[in-house]
Image (tube, rainbow, N blue to C red; front, top):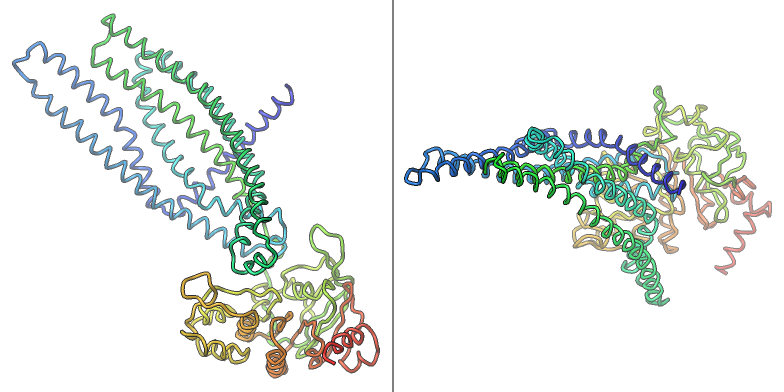
Length: 607
């Protein structure tokens, strides 16, 4: 019992702590559109006062009618003014209500855009390591959802303001008649409020725990319906297996949701009856007072309306506040996402990248292990790359080649040691300016569902409109031959995501990725397995052009195909995070080490 009470108290503490998320959200709302926010609030204040004004006019109409019954041959003149006033109030309430809906819809769009843009901006500033962490990815997924799913909370905060003003005006009439009646209304609603809050918190806890499951379901939907997986789905007969797995996961999800909603229905209904009991007890008391002649018919009408309005608004305020408090729990995920700070950041006095690079890069005792792992991917590495030198990194998979590139481009920081450029630690340079001097194509390059021109142009986004430079980059990579075959040339949409798009082969996509690297026209060019999807003839042509384009430029080539790396000035063999061998192609063959063994294994395939 004690443990249960402690859990309940902890749950309430979490709710109250989550309320601190509301002020930053309100600032987001205001920043989204100050004009719409101000208009919506003003309309709600006006709309909140309409009910009590209409009740008062109704009371006056009834009093005039009752008095007029004593002289049926004469219709009181003020009755027409009162009826007109009630009509105008009703019309104003209707129009202001629709205007509120208009402002809410507009503000919801603006808020969704504002939050989405901030999420994109913040994600762009975070370290690459964040995106390789499953826990962070769950947090990011929940933050993305907040951009759209918290629209109801915005409307709830607006309703809460309106309900509070309406309740204040209605309750003033009830309190002036009998303060204990108002207290009774409040006390009878509290159990329903506590019950709703309890089940809303359980709903949040359930949704939080199900985030990984929902991500897996999304993944199953993608691989079960995408063209990329269609071939293996058919050949391996995977559809029944994936369907069964999807059914099991969704079955468990539905069961857990059903159990919670069933409990909420039973307890919520019982506690709601308590609130209704309080209202009808107060209503019965007012009727009794009227029968005793202590209240007029008009007063009865006014108080009955005030009681009904007060009771419903008390319930609505508790319900709305409970909903906002529990919705703010979900906003915890959004705030936690925004609270994640990049570890790799520019210093206030960061230096611009050197132009030109004079000495090159130096790795001094560099070690690196990925977050959450103690295995050293690079181990105490000492290494120099001179300016204008072309280096090839070779070795089997998992030996640290791509990690080497990530460190060089400051996507990661060394776990130990330092990397220097022209004798200065990379951490002293402005990150963005440093990365502008590096053109890189990774092994897992992007395939942008964009027009061909933009597919290349993103390599140097500031020159996106410079078609001449884009054409030249396409020529250097061989992508110009592909563009020449496209129906709309450089304006052709690539990929199948959008209507009219044309899909490409893996090798063709790779040429566009190469074009992006060439467009960058950077001092450092890094190619990580740049020909993995190309046939032998295309590979030869790429490396012939690569040799021409990197003359006098610092270049790093990573490749499993040893036949293509002999053009480099120096070949470095990485093994278990350390340099096992280095030298020219002929020197390494002569030593008879790892490079010679691997080269002979590959060469045997062509004999």
